[in-house]
Length: 391
Image: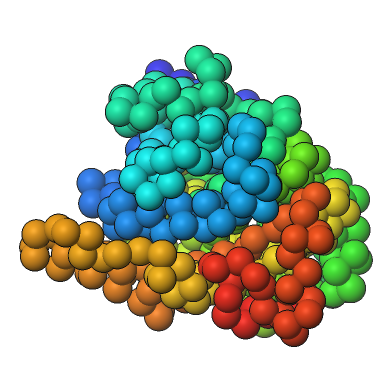
């Protein structure tokens, strides 16, 4: 039976981005393509969505406030797009919360789920069975973003899973890392860059990698955000992910790069180039992720017409939304305890709270959000009511 290693052998040296495409998204071999869900206790890693519906309830508070800006006066359809939607749990949690606390908004909200995995798309209608009428149409569970969006695009831990190129600095020049088949396994070799975009990427940042440093270059994330902004007519993007500003990501603090694997809740990597990297082991059977360059995401979004509202730790984002959530909500004591525990998990420094960053962008709403500039980095949006980093 043909294996992913056989495919690499037949195609010759592959960029790390091309390998990740195969290992994560190929219809036959891809880690994500073959399952409806990969996170949670029974999966390989844990996300904020796996904490329970509270995360979606918190996002619903932010989405409702955003809807006031997008559709002033509460009239007209409002788009809620989840990119990298998996089985649709997060969108479902948001809609259920809106139905309870903002029924008029819920009634005019059109849900679009964007997911490349056929298995996950097949599971979405079951996940959203009780709110299925909110799907914009029968074609609203697709692999591509809608052509036109007026509302909010949410992407929770999407960009860190997009394929990246890996480079290493050698004697003042960039070398690219390629994946090759050797015997019955996989290994890496160095070669010339596959595209001038790699050198241009660092040139636009005004940064030079120190000799010997490895780094991941997210050309796919850069292009995805530009495309998403272009499709957004009027509204916001909420991006939640692991990452850093470029000056930190491409420093000695990450000299080995950030490519990491997750399997059965164990994290491995990054590793020295002298060792076969963990992300080449068990191809197609484990998650592969790389930290996001938020500087390039922001500049690419700006070039496409979006403005940064805030970039902050998830801890502070959640704190800014808590006044819109009743943790008791008439629930039994045992359930109240579970919700408090879920909140603690979302806020925990050193865990999801501080390792995940929230980037909020807006387009076509500059006049509505002038409070950001007027308040020295304080946004008017609830989730960004804490001081954010300068951009």
